[in-house]
Structures are given as structure tokens and as C-alpha cells.
Length: 376
Image (tube, rainbow, N blue to C red):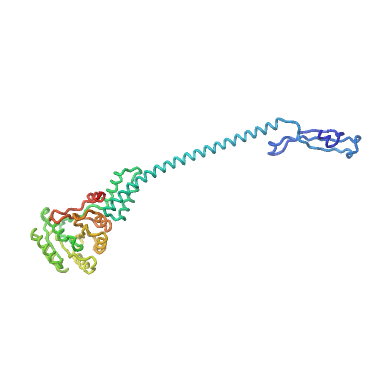
């Protein structure tokens, strides 16, 4: 019909064939029908003689095979798309679950860490209340923080901090008797109780160790100090020598060459007076290092800022040990820890009253640590 419409009613159909689309589009287009038609010369002059014309028409015949193929391809493509979406959804859900588990884990870890930090903060506050310098309190907290388990109890944290403080305080270094005479120098500011401290230590060695002990004093600026030491010497039956210069001390070495311990009471000079400190340093250097020990005597009641200045003044005198007096006159031992940390000098003795020879003992690091962690 289409051929006759195009060429006229006299058109003669010469050939008919189906033409399939090429390439990827063959899946989405129907096949075409190619019709070859001609007009008889004798029938009409409307068209050129022997004219033959090919015309391609859309296939008007329903062909199930191509349509089924397209439908099948579409169905496979849709299946792949659905599977891909499902796989993507599954991956997304798995990722979300992993993220949730990780977030939950982080939350639990943070919760444990925050609990530890809260406990650490409580202990830190207690140390500061007991007058531990914030710098040293922070140092302790940082050192123990990395060693704690995430779910540490308050008792475990306290125990760790307690042990850390004990280690930092160290073992006390006290006076010992050697095979040669030992000169023991006591230095420090005025009013800290050097003379009484010397008497206490000398009494213990005299009575408990049966040591041969002598006194030397260079504190000629205060008559009362000389008389105080003389009183103790008379009670204990200990010789006393007053010296005024380095030469006097050199003579004393010969005089006391068969003694075990010679306790030297130096003048209580101001830490602000450099000349006075130089005199004490010269006196100390008269005795060879292997024959001497030095003890810096400080009061536990002295303000921390003043203690810093005092220790700075004696910084040129090396290898001294620390004695703290008047512990019975203060409720805080924070300064003992502070000065130990500041100077790194060994702790030695602590005194806590005027009773000679009883109110003195070597510093107990464990007792100090307990005091620092105890509430007021």
C-alpha cells in the first residue's frame, strides 16, 4: 500500500526484504522492511521510462523476536542495576556499623580516660593544697598518666602517685663514720636552728655509736651561739674550738686527727651577703673533699620564695645535703618536696622540737609522701 501511495496505483513491487539496525541501537529499534518497486512503461508516462525506485518503509508487521530480545536485555540490565544497588547498600550499612562500633569504642575509651583524669585532678589539687609547687605537681601527673590503665581505680592512681613521690624524694643520706676524720659543715641562714641540730646529731653518735666527736664553731659574730654550743659540749664531754679564719681550721685538722667526726658550726649569714658566703666557701674548701660533708640547714616554716633565694645563694657550694628543721611548727611539708626537686640535693635529717637528742630523725620519704597526699 505504501509503495502504491508513493509511486501510484500502477507500481509493481519487485522485491521485499527486512533490514535490521546496526550497532548498539539494534537492541532498541525495530527492524525495517525495504521494498523495491517499479512502474510499467506502457502503463503511464507520469514517471520516466524504466524508472525503478527503492523505498524503505517502517516494518508494519509485528515481529516478536526482536522485541523479545530487547525486553530480555533490559531485564538483565535492570537485574544488574538492582544487584549493584543492593551491594552498595550492603557496603554502606557495613561501613556505618563499623563506624558505630569504632565510635562506641572511642566513647568508652574516652569515658575511662576522663574518669582517670578526674581522679588525677583530685590528687593534683591535694598536692597543691599541701603547698607542692604546681610545676612539680604537673610533672608528677604527666609522668604517671601514661602508665595508668584506662579503667584505673582511685586507689591505683593514688598508689602510683605515692610511689612516684617516694622515688623522687629518694633515700636519705646521713652522716657515716669512716677510717679518717670527717669534717661535717653545717651552713644556712640565721635562725633555722643549726646549733641545736648539731648538738642532736653529735649526741646520737656520742651515745649510740661511742664515736669520738669534737665541735668547731666559726660563728664568732654571736656570743650566744658560741655559749650555746659550749653548753652542749660540756654536757656531752666534747671538746670545742673557736676559729676565726682558714689558718685556725688548718690547725684544727692536726688537733683532731684522731677523732671520728668534727662538727663545724658556721655563722648564720644572710643569703643576700655575697662576701659572707664567700668566707664560708673558703672555709669549707680548706678541707679535702674526701674528708668533708656539707649540710644545708633550712627551716620548714620558711616561705618557698625565700627558700629558693637561699638555695640559689649556696649554689656554688656543691654536694651538700638537706636538713629541714621545725617540722613541728608547720602543717605542710610541701617545701621539703619542692626544694628537693629544685636542688636535686639528697635529703638527710628532719628535726621537730627542742629536745636533745630525741627530736631528730632521718627524713622518711614514705612519711613525707603520705603527708603530701593527706587532707588538711
